[in-house]
Image 1 (cartoon, rainbow, N blue to C red):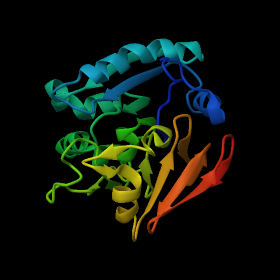
Image 2 (image 1 turned 135 degrees about the horizontal axis):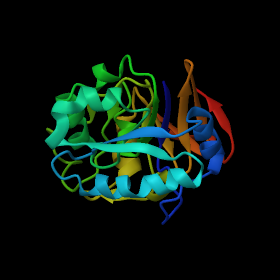
Image 3 (image 1 turned 120 degrees about the horizontal axis):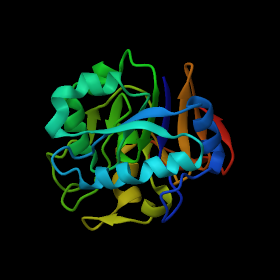
Amino acid sequence: MVYFLTSSPCLPDSPSLNPANGFVDELRKALPGPCRALFVASDPDDPEHTYRFFNDMPGSFAEIGIPFAQADVLIRENQDRCAELIANADLIFLCGGHVPTQNRFFQDIALRGRLAGWDGVIVGVSAGSMNAADVVYVQPEEPGEAVDPNFQRFLPGLGLTRHMILPHYQREKDGWLDGMRLYEDITYPDSVGHRFYAMVDGSYLLGRDGREELRGEAYLVADGTLTQIGRENDITLL
């Protein structure tokens, strides 16, 4: 299996794939010809966002010379075909959305176990990349989550990587939620005893052959501090 855990795979305000940090070049190496794609929804009961992404990606991949021979979406309506859809896919997208909602769906369809023996290419997008971890840090996102004592900030994930990812750092670093600074007041305290990897759009974690690399601008959040560990075009071994 080869996996690309991205903050966003696309250029800003465009469905075209972002070539920064060798992303397109590495995709071409991993997928040298036409492929069968499967899009796993972030919200299986409200898949509108997933379908928009589903509609954009065939053209985006064709632009870089990787046409889709087939494309399917995995949602609530067809989750009984989960094993068949995964077995028939060469490329699986873990789509972006609300992390806890997607995590529940992954648990419902036992996705971690189904991917254990699957040999293909995975592209994680935002929440999908976060849920790819062995243990997922669920950074509060929606109003009320940061102050809810019952909100679970650590959940079991897919186990593709042991590294916990925080996407869209360039957008979220100055964000506020529930009257608190998202990073300084919420995420930094949560990082005590943990290591989170914050990535900007255009950066990604590449995993293959037992080796993991952070490609591009990235930051380590650990024990209440933030340290830059990668810049544009850097390759940081994990």
